[in-house]
Amino acid sequence: MSLVRLNIKGISYSQTQNGAYALILSEVDGERKLPIVIGAFEAQSIAIALEKEIKPPRPLTHDLFKNFADRFDITVKQVIIHKLVDGVFYSSLICERDKIEEIIDARTSDAIALALRFDAPIFTYKNILDKAGIFLKGDETSATPEKQQEEIISEEVLPDDISMKSDSTDYKKLSLDELKTLLSQAVNNEDYEKAARIRDEISKRK
Image (cartoon, rainbow, N blue to C red; front, side, top):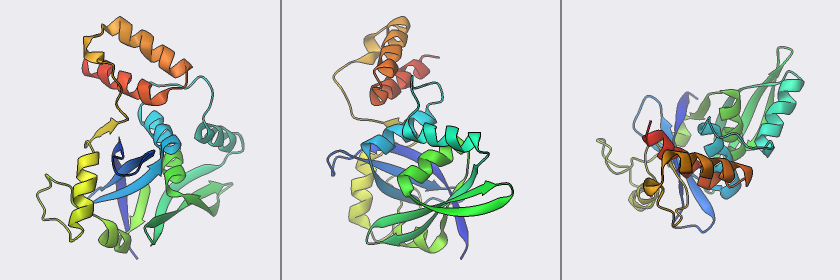
């Protein structure tokens, strides 16, 4: 079976599942998207890995795994989403140590959080993308039959952006210095969703 490479398209808070997030993976050489529902902790961990300038004061679980692997010369070479059963995606970490390759089972959200930290590519099999891939609204290609799923996901996702749960603060009204202070406070308080939103606003002004 042929492998298809995926990139992270975006993350957003799920309006349909309380406490969950929608992670959208995008086909590199195509238009299809692969939506995956993940938990809040994993969403935060992925968002932090994408936001390179946010540095947690203490290592998160996936950072700890990366530090542990680095200490023992273990490398994650790639992640493969290899199975879809009853709406659940199954993934594998392809790891290497001393030129010996090992395959480790992992939840897809954890696997992607680690792939980002190891700069490892993410793949899935073509038959999985054929089965679960969708076209979001705005794509030029006509949609797949999963129309209802398409509408739900397209409402949740802001393409090429990390959109976390909204709060009442209007960051646009704050000065750059105030934003930097709030960013530092959010990171120190380990409020990484808030930190990601503040970082987005700072980035817009550069």
